[in-house]
Image (tube, rainbow, N blue to C red; front, top):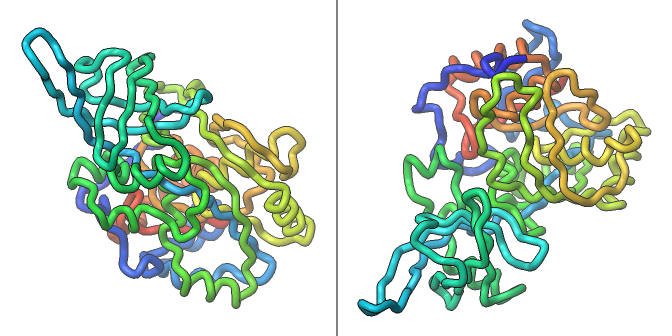
Length: 353
């Protein structure tokens, strides 16, 4: 299984830099059946009730994205006086000791023990560094830290958007789902960005049930696969939780013969992680580095709602495991030919193998 098997050519103009408005007006490509030539239907996210109804359960990732990109100043008093260096910090994940692992640019211009001063009274001390990453300790905790971060930070837009424009205040709304409850992600579960209250009401009236799980999406979600034999790729770890309530709801749906459809690859990876020990969904909490590629035996997911992904990414491998590699290439050719918008702020697909 080669990395090139998951490659395709994407015209740059199809990379979305802003979301559809309203959210649920985005286009939706529905693929029913994993066989080549099976139906493909062009629709809108607002049309989900044509395919989902009583007995179906959508599983939502309720993680909340933090404004993890910070700009500050390192001040140093030396023999020639006070010197300042502008620093860019991107928070990656909380550490066991209460700090944060982060990327700092330029890392070479700050010494261990020195502080970076940000807006809103927020300060960070560099505790150490490892393999290009830094460990920071902040002067604020809890709600005070969250409030200062919301004021001082910017949304950590994916590289393919950040290369085209800077994050702004609108992104603090656009890059956050209406389900966001549990703070800790540095990237959005983007399939859920298409949902709004009007769509949720329509789905509920159609009999669709909802369960909420948490997977704090890390910056590693954007790391490229660098090995040609994809089965040797090592995934980044992310923290997640399936509560007893969510596990019971999902198990009841499965027992009744209903479909469990995760909204987004993050929710799917978490469900399959929770089912790994026994083969059935169960309460679960911890870090998962599950890597799903063709040949993976799905235990929980009966389908998937997901955006269109980067070439040669682990997410292309995941959806190929669900639908078949040839079928995915057929789906993506249709999406490109039909001018669907790609990636985090782009359109969506409903994959029903």
